[in-house]
Image (cartoon, rainbow, N blue to C red; front, top):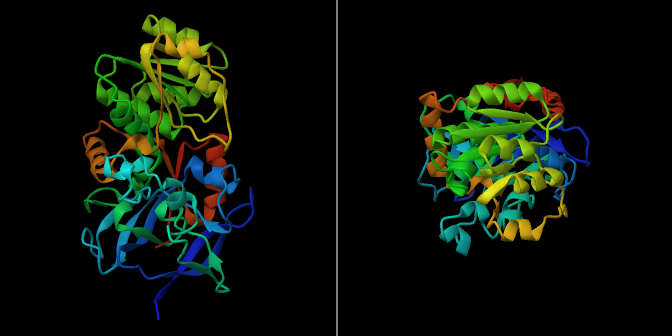
Length: 372
C-alpha cells in the first residue's frame, strides 16, 4: 500500500472564497517525484487569478507555486537530489515536446495541463482531505500552500545550503519571470532603454535585471508613488505616475523617440497598448501580465508593422530554471539583485491577510513561513 504523509494545506473550494487551512494527506513520491518539506512559499498574482477562476481550473485545489524547502523523500528514479537537500520549486514542463527539446521548457506544449490541470499529466493527483476525499493539486507541479509538496525532478532546483532558503521561493515564478524577460526573452542590451509597465514584484525584478544588463535608461510606470520610489532605489533612472502623466509621451521624451524594450506586467489590456505605442522603431514589447481568459486589446497594425515593432509573449522569462535561479542567487549574494527589498513575511495561518495585502498594494511580495 502506498505510503501517505499528513499535511496542513490551504484549500480553495469556491471561486473568490477565502482559502481554508485543512488537514489532509499526500502520497509518497512516485519514481520521478520529490517530496519537499516546505519552509516558505511566495504568494503570486496567479494564485489570486486562479482563486477567482479568471483562469479556469478544477476545484477544490491546493494552490501555491513559489515554494522552497528541504527534500523529505525521493522516488527511486531521482538522481539530482537526496533527502536533506535544499531546493526551490518552479514551473512544471514535460521534457519531451518539441518546445521543451528546443530549449524553451517555459513554453511547453503541455504547460496548461501540467501547471493548471489540477493533477499530473495522466490526470492523477496525490492529495486527500481529512475525510479522504480527493483534492486537486500539482498546481505548477507543486501546490506549495502546504506543509509538504510533491514536485517532480524536472521542476526542482537544488540550491546551496548557505543560501537564505525562506527567501528563495519567489525566484521560482514572479522574480524569475520579470528578470528572465529582461535577461533571456528580450535580451536587453547594454546602453539600451527599457520601460516596465507595472512595478509589482515582476516589474521591479525586471528593473533590477535591466540594470544588471546595462540598460542606461530604465523607466518605471505605475500609479503608486511608494512603488515608484522603490523602483528608483532599485535602478530606475526615470519614473512615470500614469495617473498624472501620459506614459507614452513621457517615455518618448525620456528616450528621444521611444524605448528599445518595454514589458507589460500589469495584466491590463489598455496598458499593453501603451507599452506597444511607447516603443522605438524595431523595439520589442514583452507581455508577462496575467489577464482573464479571452482578454483582447486593439492595436494599430500599421504602427506595429511599418516601424518593425515586435510583440513577444513571455512565460516564466523563457528561462531554464535550473540554470537561471542559481544565477539570480549569485547576483543577490553580490548585492546586485536585492529582491529581498520586495518581501514581507507572514505566518502560514495568515495566508488570507497576505493575499489581501498583496491585492491592496500594501505588500509587494508576501512570503508565507510554514510552521516548524
